[in-house]
Length: 314
Image (cartoon, rainbow, N blue to C red):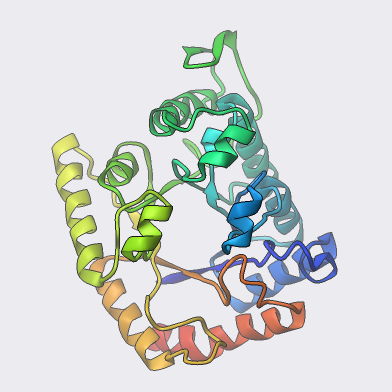
């Protein structure tokens, strides 16, 4: 199992700690030197105040902050978790991701999903009700754009005939597409369009808020994986599917109550189930609990030394 570290760039109120080029570069270089596979960032272009008051969070623009990460590192993967393509015109999204992948030498992992925050869709002028159809349509269009060939495509609110976009991504045929969400529709999208799946722990109340399917136990996760296998057989997919999912119910490393033994034990079971990556965060986005970069760097090193190293030995 490989680990992808979440950068606390939601802490926009502390730019000197987490929101400057120097701050992001220091965190990225540390993650690379410690052996993390990559780093990830979130996406909220214009969140509503009500969402922020109830525990939601801001975010830096994903491709901008990951470009800073790319410039400071050599091998670290650059992951969006999640980049909501539905907020964007697919041609502009394809250009941004291709540019980042080209500049970084092919290090992008495009984590994406349908999105759940209806007021944010309204703010950027996008239809919320059709977001699933729009995402499927956009993924097909973006794959066509990334070939570097002339495209003739039209969609709900775009049309291009005889257009071409360069550069193409370095990753071929395109950056890995990892699909977020617990629903069967998200799983079908991962199998039919993607290279990976990003399920999330989701008690019933939280699942209703993010408009997804509850995922409260490893049995729920197994059921999702089994559905993915059946659907892959149905559509004739033989390529393996990466899955990113970390142990749940054990707390955040560095927080009171974190159970290292339980984390390692559950991570071992996840690995046996076929989980290939785990996302690592030391606080919930929007919680405001990560106040100092030095603390984040200490936690990143401590997690590798005290937790990840145990899994590597097993």
